[in-house]
Image 1: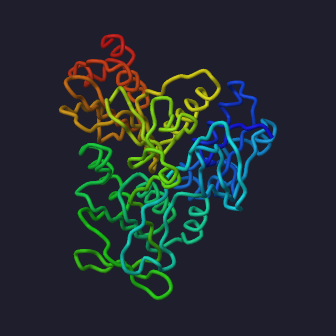
Image 2: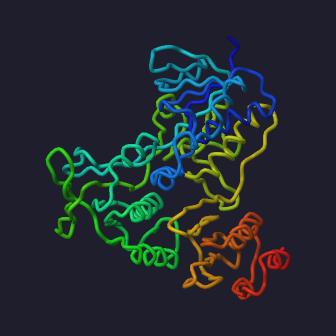
Image 3: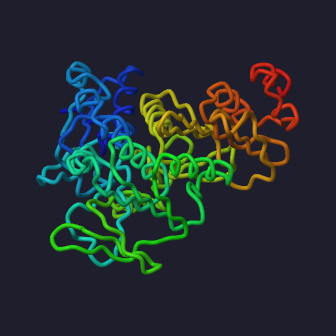
Length: 408
């Protein structure tokens, strides 16, 4: 068989890379290896519609089942790569077989960070990353059950909203003084804390779990304050760890992620890294980033594929994210770290507003709640590194299209 491209990881990034290679006219073999038994699927619905039961597993697929075979993309599911031989240009699979490659794409993603406290081995303590994780968590859901969520990030908040809708009692613990502390400003943190509390979530800030209690299955969570909470199930959502070990073992440069250039090439020019596992340069923010987002996975998949297909196009975009909670759609773009001014457009009390983050009068980030026009406009402003007038930004009588024309 001719050497072609091997993709390690069958998530959003790997699937996009395979798809884009064919779109770019690449006609060599493509083999995508995934350690899950499922064909590439969407992860964002797992904490929302899938957990709630309004989306089924078949609807999660990134492509129709027949797509992969018709595109001559070989899926090897339920397998993993155990070793990379960069000199020999081959990988060793978990069944001890070897596959040769011309180019290798590492889309190994990330894994949930665990909470190493006494009782962590008890049943009914969950993480949420894969379809199997979601199935296990969904099976444990039930009306009037007591759920304790550890972590006030997107996954924790989305699952809290889903559980409240399912009639469960929810307590959420966050070790930081506010929710979403790593990714949002105080205004947005306070807004979502208020939304969840009004919906019935018992939010505990500046609080940590130090032990789980129970025999066989979890029955309680002990807090740093000494309080003991009853629990029928626990969800741990305290971030992820990049799956960089395979790359590090074969000598690729790693730094909390696999280090790549703006074409997604690692320190070996025939090996690429994309998606949650990659640490890449971003010229807009003048720093190296490791991003956990669908947008980043898709765009880096396209970037690696374009370079392999001989039509290189550097990746340099403002990152964007989204989260659905209750009737709220939160859309975020940019990175707010280092801002020196906050501008709020709209009425927070009406649950439709945007928070703009500025640095030296240049917009660097936006958090938009039920405000799609503000979100789309801010993507253009941040990508263009536009200098803006804070007073005009506040003026809701001026449509975002007009603001864009004035700020160009």
